[in-house]
Amino acid sequence: MIDCPELRAACAEQLRARETQTAALTAFIGLDGFVDEIIHVVDKRENAEKFDRITHIAKLGERISAAAGRSTNVELVRKLTKLGGNGPIMANALASFGLKVTYVGALGWPNLHPVFEPFSRRAEVHSIGEPGGTDALEFEDGKLIFGKLTQLAEITWPNIQARYGREKFAEKFHTASLVGLVNWTMLPYMSDIWSAIQRELCPDVTGPRRRMFIDLADPEKRSNNDIARALELIASFNRYFDVMLGLNEKEACEISRVLGLAPKPHTPDGLAAMAAEINKHVPVETVVVHPTAYALAVTNGAVCQVRGPYCAKPFITTGAGDHFNSGFCVGKLLGLNNEMSLLAGVATSGFYVRTAKSPTLSDIAGLLTDWPKD
Image (cartoon, rainbow, N blue to C red; front, side, top):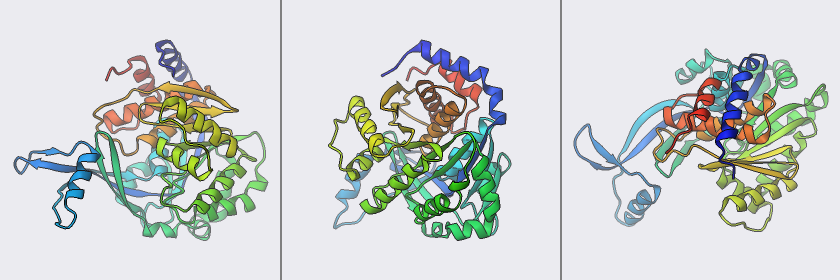
């Protein structure tokens, strides 16, 4: 596990030196979209304005379990309404870094949902369907995501062509520095979309190899056959792109189980071994895994791990992984190695959970230089 002030300082220097290069980079991201409600759960209410929140998931679980056969009341307090979805959050963060971003996804139909209007001023945004909804119950040790997804069935290859345009999609797909197709789990027709893209657009991919990022999002609710098909399609993209597959710790364990791999210890070394085995079975350029306190990447069997700026009491956690993904991708686009790209990722996530804002490269360079102590 790398926890080296000298490496962080070198990474900050590299990011500052290359900051102007982001203006020449383009990203084509899709296809989901959510309206996120960030929610705290009341433990004890003192008065109309003041309450103590439930800080740990297990405590809420105990309260719910105790209500079996009797019922109970759980009070939810909305803290923030924001743009959501793996794609919009990642794309918004990339735009903050200075990339020219094009986003296609479920942001409102026929009119853009108001929550995405600030995003539309920072990126070229095209909506092809109604967004889903997310109630994100946040705790100090994690979050519970309750999603409303029915409307995302509108995100299909025929609708992409009809509502955005086949030629426009093909042009962006064939030229962007980074292509990101994320949130497979929440989009019921994403595998069909990937298959159509590989059949109809990938044969025309030419020129230097570019980068593609894919994030499955928590696949636990999908069948083993669905997950296996998705993994095959992801590996097939690597014929045309340098594919980066992003996973959090839970997702890595689920993929390992579906692949039939032997269980590994719940340690950094165990997770590193798991990621390396996943990469053997899903032969993409890089598998990157981001638990809350550190992150690791595997390329050609070589594993590196870096410690993150862990925050015991984050201001926000929903979207932290998407910010990590954007920082890691920017590092790779700027030519940084895996170690420094991981540092860019954890610094991006670390800045976001402390501020609820997407950082600039100067912001994450500053965090790397002045590394948090908590």
